[in-house]
Length: 277
Image (cartoon, rainbow, N blue to C red; front, side):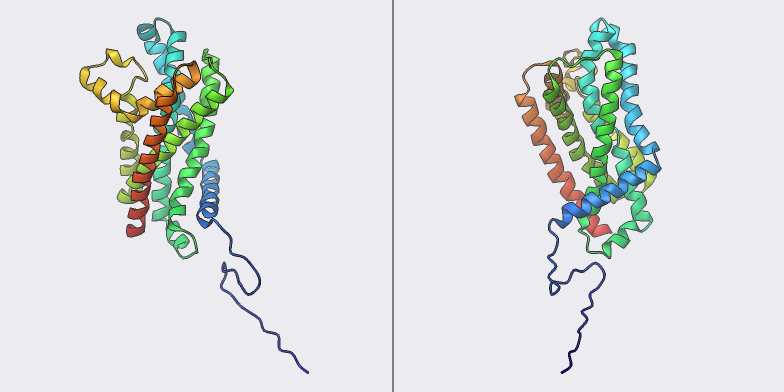
């Protein structure tokens, strides 16, 4: 009696159901995390991307405190307490955005995304991985900002949990707004244009607020913009969480705006990416 051994062959990367293997779940999450790790490795090899995200908020903090502190608040310490929550939000909204767009454009031009398309990888994970890597850079930038702020004299007046909540809220807002830069990157696909547009787009959101000076001192048209500006709500939430005060309304508004940004810009970026790549 003879037996015939049958060898089942499968294509690389495809798991065989006959062999009893179960397909892995959550492919979007798994692949996005793997691509985020790849982007962080790129950052480690090119630390200039991280330095920009870390240094710029510190420069704004020191510059504003020592140039405008006496004029706006009467002392640099009082102004530092007032300014710091706004710089916290600026760190995630303004800095690091350009690095995301440039990384995506460079990968598209080098054919990296084309190679990923030949693999069983969800299209959205290629973009999501870049944005998730940004969230890690935000954590590092916020840690450095708090270190410099404490060295200058800033003190949290609430506690650890509200401080972590303020950081988390800023990261959520920055994460959602990063998709605007991703959308610009997949539309323009040019490093110079992405650098320019990606850096200028958040400016009306960041500086059309009471971050550097009370809204009451601004012209009427700017006060109107600050009243509806979603970043104003995030700064109000940060001030309440770090310095004390009501936060429920501001936190809720910030989360709702973040969800809206993520839904609109994220969906548009993935849709455009699928059509142009």
